[in-house]
Amino acid sequence: MPMTRINMRAGKSPAYRQAICDSLYRAMRETFNVPEDDQFMTITEHDGDNFRYSASYLGVARSDDLVLVQLTVSNTRSLEQKKALFSRIAELLVESPGLRPEDVFVNLVEVDKENWSMGHGLAQYAT
Image (tube, rainbow, N blue to C red):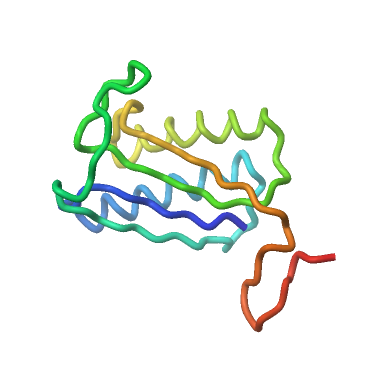
């Protein structure tokens, strides 16, 4: 059950933001075996004064279209799955909404499965 936080500069259309969510969800379904209807995403938009980034860190030429994606996930995926996820996210965000791959920044936060409660005060994944 990934929880997805998306940070970006303000000013994009609702369709653009929806395309980001749709592409991220598709990438997670294809590479992380995320179940259907398992979508928990937020988008936070920032004005230019509140959205700072390095335009060249590690030799990546970023622009103001940079999208910062943080996925909190259970720590059950292999390194190969993580690499596939990063690659697929970039591919799909290039397709729709048309981001440059340089403007796709993804961070995974892994937690133990028992650290989730998805309602009713229960730890649904705890054994």
